[in-house]
Length: 132
Image 1 (cartoon, rainbow, N blue to C red):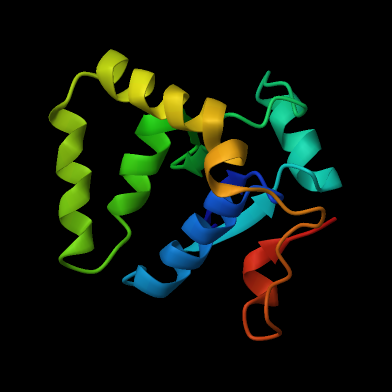
Image 2: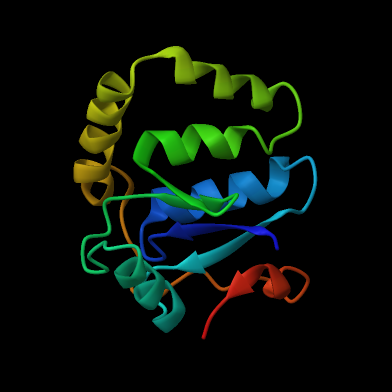
């Protein structure tokens, strides 16, 4: 099964990140679900996470859930070069990475804005997104 990214579908930074991932993936292996969707909300609860708290980025890969900076840097491993090299930032201790991640997450709506509706994928990409 493909690996899955759970993202905040109304956050401009988050939807731009999904667009970036789609553009730079080496292979089309990742699928996406907005945490505002029924499937995303259910998945967050199954992981023991609050679906109302949209401040975390989740990657499900290899039967494991990765959160926050760890999820973001593991996603970099799916990219083509040179973007794949960003995964090397995992050498930075997780508490430091997560502190920076939390700062951006806390202010993302103010700094990058938000929309009232989730990202609508193009017909070509619709199969990569889980909605129900």
